[in-house]
Amino acid sequence: MTQQTLEIVTTAVNRDEPAFSLREINESTPDFKERHRYQIIRVVRGDSLATYRRDLGTEGETGPVSRRADAIRRCPGYADRSARSDA
Image (cartoon, rainbow, N blue to C red; front, side):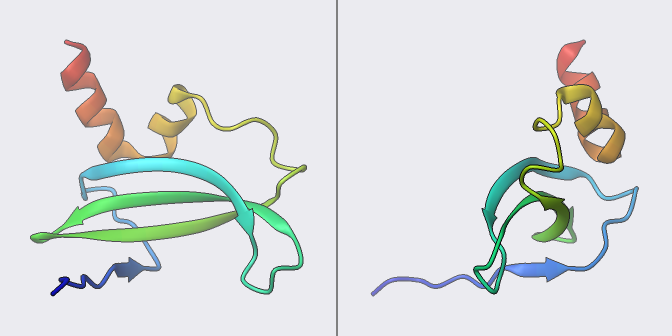
């Protein structure tokens, strides 16, 4: 028997929530008409992970995938953890 897990999806991320992961991917829109870049942030919320997805626009308009400095600017929890691991 396989165990199924539900994903917690959120419409906002708070600055005081620790970031678990940050990534940007290109994938089809829900209607499959275009390809967009999405930013996906997973944060620790209570004893679970919550996922936030942000549509960054069409694949060709968004430029290159964010560099580490841009990721830190957008995701303060990532910056805190990253700074501790660099020390």
